[in-house]
Length: 102
Image 1: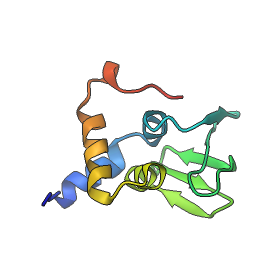
Image 2: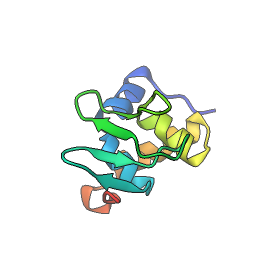
Image 3: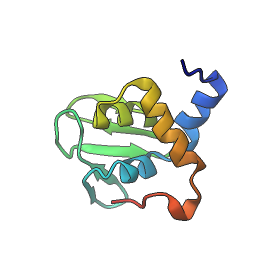
């Protein structure tokens, strides 16, 4: 059984840029003014945005906030542990090896 410390989970949640997670998941995106719009994994709409201050992605139609772990879970259908492992791999990958924004 995997065990992750609270500090490690906090680091994943706060230090892996939500825009990079969207890129790594290869979600369809659209750029508006300064906002990155992404394809919501729940309603499939684009009434979305990311907030770099809180590192959250939000769907305004669903009224749901996604942190990096939540977004991986919803997009891939994976469980919490597999989603954390996915992000852990992203965090450990050198910058040049990370998937770029879609």
